[in-house]
Length: 559
Ligand SMILES: *[C@@H]1O[C@H](CO)[C@@H](O)[C@H](O)[C@H]1NC(C)=O
Image 1 (cartoon, helix red, strand yellow):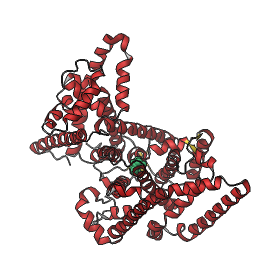
Image 2 (cartoon, protein in one colour; image 1 turned 180 degrees about the horizontal axis):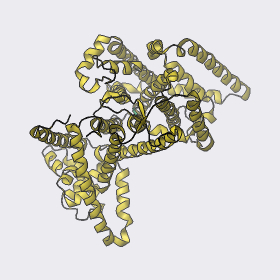
Image 3 (cartoon, helix red, strand yellow; image 1 turned 90 degrees about the vertical axis):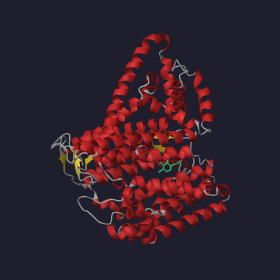
């Protein structure tokens, strides 16, 4: 017990029991699979291909394949023929409520829990993903909450901080620039690249405790939130797709990893404030556009919706008593108190963090609305005769330079607390200037650095992982005050090794989150989605209750 830095909770035991069960089921699945494989000698590739197809499909087919085998008529589960038929049959069946019970008992989850051979084998890859996910979370626990791996102190050197960023950017520039056939303003590879380099600076800021770049980091966080407003608005605006399945997948993507990390490490959700913040603003964008969607084809009405969003935020954030009235009932998820610096006002962290970026997602929506106009303007400049084209660009860039300089001396240079006061109302300035400069010529728009783009895709995972397998927080709800040390005495070599491991693990967690998302959250079958949610919640509650009952019965003090 001296190995652990805190007691054990029944939530942790619950997940551990589930993990052990998954290992057993997975080994059984591999055994069943290996027994079957030689028999299908000439046809070895086909089941694998089918599994890959399932992996890529939106999950409903995988689920219904499980159902089809569980129905007992699919004697050969690797024969995909029946799958589609079954799936339409099944989705029709869900329209009728009396079939809900049947579909639950026939689901992959329940069949696997009952150790039905066919279901276990069918879900071999899912079980494997669960086991791998569990192992990585155990690595979180071992690295952060035991004394097995030593810790080191942070130390800041501006030289090293800038050096690392310059080296990485040079590599990205030298080896990973790629041209995408997307001449569009703010295309996807470009926003990914943007997220990537900001994330690198954000992480280095934490690792080295580079206090002097605090204000810049605040702008980067604002830029992420801006992208949430921009990206989500563009999507709903262009597609009009408000389907619950897709929305649920997004929520899963944002909260799956953080949920398990919170239970296993006994942390508050608010320790990873980026997650609740993006979740709530994603929900707000959805609501803004999903209410009266018929108005979305009209620019004027969209503009009104955006104005109303500003007004809504003003009323519910700027008027602090309304904010507290709204969020107090949610203290149990959004409360936070740093154990090294405790407070009674546990909602303050949520108020402060979400407050900093409360307007920028609305501005992101506004930018998305103006996007076609801005694109047309850029195109207009691109099409000018050479001399006038260069003149126009020079004027725009000069304006940006002056605006940037004024912004820098009047706002950016303020000390931390004064800066935080004005941040919510000014963060749009550097963000807008950057967008203009980054997109001023077609060449700049088309090219981006894939190294940063790659890192930009796994920002959520690197954000959560940094607390525990790159740095160390030691105790529940603790901030990551120290560093993980695998090579004592060599801070830079240690940095290199731990970082490599940390990026690798983060990337795996990204893949596993997506894989499990596709299995558990069907994209376009609401009845199946509802069934899966009920099943997952029920299974968790039953298991948790059992474990807690045993805990009370044995009178052990686990937490
Ligand atoms: C909406 O925002 C969330 C949070 O940033 C993000 O994960 C998701 O990809 C966005 N959706 C779209 C369609 O851009």
